[in-house]
Length: 267
Image (cartoon, rainbow, N blue to C red):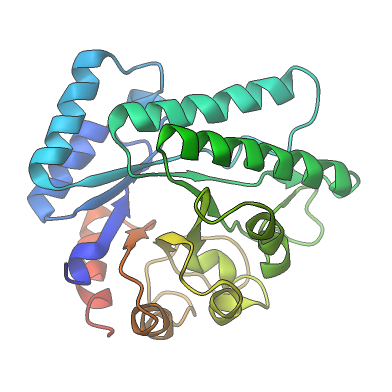
């Protein structure tokens, strides 16, 4: 499969069937989608719809992945709410399996600065459980390195630096927990793209997520509008032997098509 063919799209909350039809028309073979709201809501899937989506993907060689919502606090420890987070994550894995997804992207949650140890423990314990559940049910779980929030923000995402991400990878076997490497998030911290790849190499990567920014704060710009060195990113990954897919999480359909052509020429 060519590099261009390995560059896919994050369709977000777009109706999955519509996203698949667009992918077929534009020869895109990898799609992420979200099932928290709108037409893809996880309660909106019956047997007929599920079968139709699986048939569309299998007939056209398209792989799909479920991207859970980072607003759901995986580091939750409060009574009742904590149990609901657990149920949400299991339901996400179940839906991913139902639809034949090849991967499910999850997050480590966030803390409020005054309760860091409790949040970290709740987060790690929950990821241990959901990673095992994914492995036991045949679903590949990928942890996304999230974005830096401003120092004076009340909340801060966990697993946004190499050090924080390493805690999860050290505790959970690679066969149970992979990595959704989000290059634009790594660009917001001193570790950078090179720091993350130096620390973890490509062994766990199940998806590389793409967008640009200026290194100042979270924003999804089209490559070239910010300061992320995409040539270095692709050169490092491809020369290291990465054969997986990429996911464009920015721009309009037209911008993605043009950007995909440009990115595929970088190496």
